[in-house]
Image 1 (cartoon, rainbow over the protein chains, first blue to last red):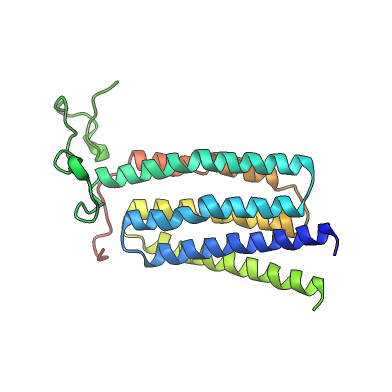
Image 2 (tube, rainbow over the protein chains, first blue to last red):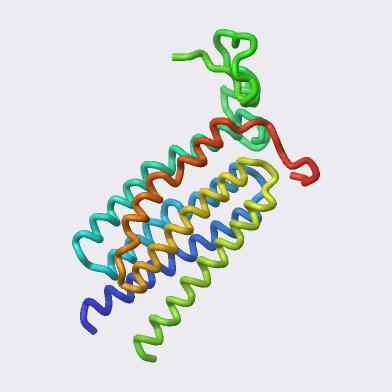
Length: 139
Length: 97
């Protein structure tokens, strides 16, 4: 067996592991009861699954340009996934879809209530209350 | 057991697992009681599409879909950020949590 055959088979194994992570995410999204646990399950293929898949693709197509593009894909995934997950989790907390009894808030438990205005200057009347989010002091 | 047979079996397993996971995520997007559950499901579906296109590029030795993967991994989170910014308090009323 030459090393190209070994790299091909290793790439296939990495692809299979990425596909298994996707299946785990699907099962978790169906079975888990809460928004935060579903986010926990759904982030698996977005990080480790995609990294395994691009590792498998890089092991099978071994040219320089393809490997560069695969590195770019991994970097972009690692940059954009925390932003999206943070926005979704924050929106879920602010619209009251996260049970406060399920999470440990520590010393912030009394200050932060879902759907309530954060501490600070009281929000002006009106504002963008139609969005379901508390008005924040600008700047 | 020859090498081609191993590659064929592994390719079918990869495709089957990806299709099954996409089906499960689609069920969650359909029945998800709130908008944010559907957003999480669609995010996961985008990453499954990225995995599928990567597997297709690896199994057919064609690198024409890799720029598509770059653009998907760049802008795939825009929709979830936009929905999460403007989401309101709503939930499907007849579905228990």
